[in-house]
Length: 225
Image (cartoon, rainbow, N blue to C red; front, side, top):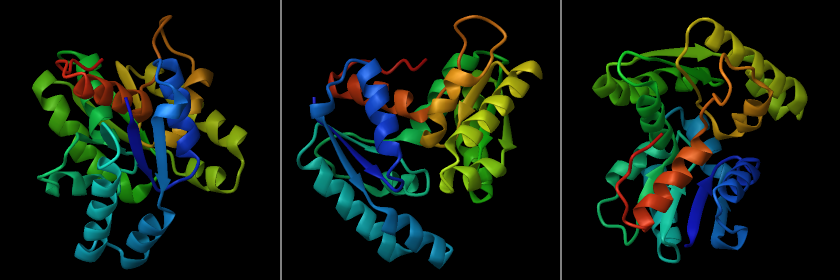
């Protein structure tokens, strides 16, 4: 099984490789492409322009030509997946896989808390998670954790993950059924967070997306948890 990834942050490569190892996918079966330039161009333009969407589609289709599935790990690029109508393999949005997993785990009437570092991504995450949660009649709360993006970019990873873990524990203490990390690079904080019951851990998009990729490649029904 060959899975290709399109990243816009180099650190996400390690996050997805770690998740793949946990799920039994060999690292030799993973192909990573990092396009920081796409994210930076969108930030400069202030929007996902038609030209940048075309560049992203071309990159995804190139990856699809030599893979069994492609995963878009950046939420900023994710919406372009809906515009790809003819791909030889599944193209999966990591953020959408996470939202579906959170809704499935919350169950009827549960509460999903999504921790988000980027202010610009708050509304898009609210819409995405709400769309999936509505079928389960679960509620969604987006919590902005503003300091962690700056500490992550400055290389202060211990402080970054500690802050995310504290926000996770706080969300559980306030009644969250499920806590989800909006950004893949947050995943290492899961091991630091305390949960109200043994076996409960926050959800991250790396594991959610890989599970979907494996199920679609194997043509299994997708029941995300």
